[in-house]
Length: 223
Image 1 (cartoon, helix red, strand yellow):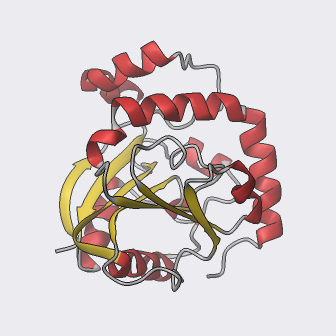
Image 2 (cartoon, one colour):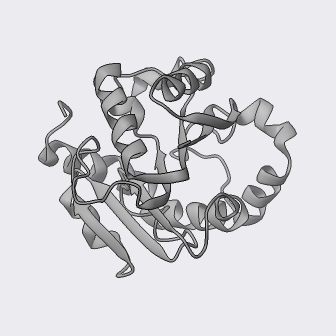
Image 3 (cartoon, rainbow, N blue to C red):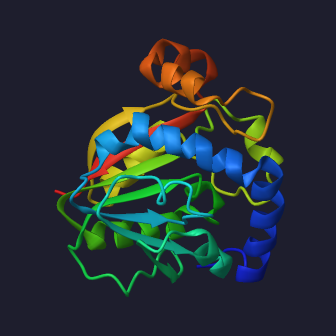
């Protein structure tokens, strides 16, 4: 996949995520998982975190069998021993058997792909490793609402909306389960409050997503 080199990804992660605060990111994702995402997975099943970053999602999600991939080899240092990590391109998951996973998840990754040809390859590879009835949970910046902030990141290439992503998933053989055009705010790298009680309240009141949500949440299923 023609994306950044592993060295470049390592430097981007160190600058962007550490400046945000790793402890803050982990605390936010702990609440997101316990209050929302745990309901979308199978506790006794399996899940892959695609482009896992520093493991904020995969470390906190309640699933028995956990896998993670990332181009950045440093990611392994931040993952719990219960996570099986492989440094890998997102469109080459040859270490995972076909029809083997209950869920796959990715957050804020597809926008880093260079074009839709590569995105198609990633979607097809996830479809391969999912079991029939397995689901791909995708979160990312919605270009319809984050069209200004989106281009503030040097490594953003592929603009996607909830509509275009859903269409791309359908074209690659998925059945769309749900599409939320406005879910979480664009980024946590700002002064917005992130206390766990506020996050829980926000998740329980989708009315507020209409004002603050700039990321889509799309769930698609392998027929």
